[in-house]
Image (cartoon, rainbow, N blue to C red; front, side, top):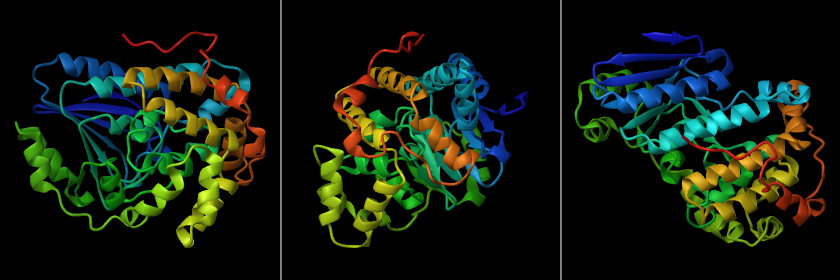
Amino acid sequence: MSMAQDILFERKDGLAVTTLNRPGALNALTLEMCEAYDRQLVSWAADESVRAVVIKGAGERAFCAGGDVRAIWQAGKKGEALTADFFRAEYRMNRRIEVFPKPHIAFLDGVTMGGGVGISLHGHHRVATERTLIAMPETGIGLFPDVGGTHFLSRLPGGLGLYLGLTGARMKAADALYAGFATHYVPSNRLDEVETELAKADDIDAVLRDLSEDPGPAPLAEHRAAIERCFVQDSVEAALDALAAEPGDWAAKTLITLKERCSPTSLKVTFEALRRAAKLDFDAAMVMEYRLSQAFMAGHDFYEGIRALLIDKDNAPAWDPASLAGVTDDLVEAHFAPPAAGELSFD
């Protein structure tokens, strides 16, 4: 076993195993973890003795709760380079998973949000458990659904991607499979068995198919018609109007979430990002996301969102602009401009 404190790599026969090892921080990703995993994937891709890769999280609470946004917040406050370096390294790692030539299997056992989605979604297999809780909650911290989220969400049918991206709605296993964030369901107490069988197997698909179970009905399916009515719209404002006209608790709660918990700038930029990403290939979407990340790092709402959620924990962010009406088309467009320090590039 080779070891960097926060990320572990080991071999089990033909299976390469990665463990995100920050359980006290819900396995949140640091710059060093992203860089280490990227390098390891390059090595494993070239190693003929590696048949497949498994990635999992330490502890029982989380697979990966996202990037270490507290560290990014602190760096941004000091004007340090982490606000660019982290996103650049994370997005390159996400892309490495997207093009990885061998089976990449993520055990989504526990909280899987933001960067945790990015380090799993672009691989071949994502195994949910009864502890899985998946979301892209970035609009609630003054950011946008990144890590390749714009590319994936923009391809979901019937307004589903826009709903998940704007609201940060949380999904358990059945919904995660329904929406495509997960590919299989296995109870958490059988993950060791899955790993053991994968280490011996030539047919990865067969192992996962044979050990998978039915997670039950997806609550999300019950709201699909309403989601389509409300989120297949030409603007965020139109979606809010549709929600206000939609009967039932689901629409009322969703409207409250968007109005009271989300950055208006994040909502409008996310809407436009998904519209554009639908026409982009993966690499172009990632270049766009890097532009957006740097615009948000130079703005106000990300720092205010992290302050309210993680620093002062008052859950009362003062967004600027404070309303959708204040988010002009010019402000949205400015987020898509190339960063002065240079574009994201891939090797």
